[in-house]
Image (tube, rainbow, N blue to C red):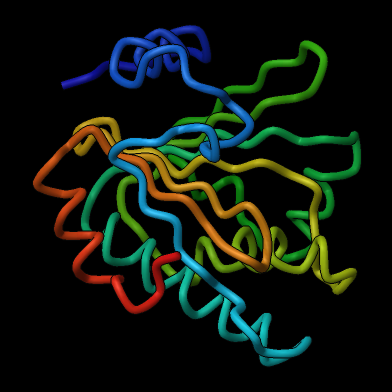
Length: 181
């Protein structure tokens, strides 16, 4: 079992499990990755509704009854406030660490997945490029260290799922084959 007591513990565990992969995007990874189409050919509100539905469905499938982490890069000083205004409840995390270098990074651990808990994040990410509210300019990795799994919703177009767990990779690929790109 991985013990994380600080942001540096988190980053060390991340490097140990996933290697030195990009912290902003999973797009360059070529193996053990599934790319999911979220919005499809839908327009505006239907596109957002479908993207949020698919994101929440995938997150529930991957994290149901599991402890997981969020690693959130805030691309401006206003993004934490925007997430709170969207309804995200930072205080519901069981661990929270912050790091400020070039950008602010927030690390949050949760004991179990809740659609209610994560919907403000998914909707804020999806809405950002669509210029809808609530929105926040963030990069968020949803991580389960035990499953060796990372999910990154990059915008209303899609999300990437990366796992070093081969059995889980094939289960996810099969479960969401209709949505994969």
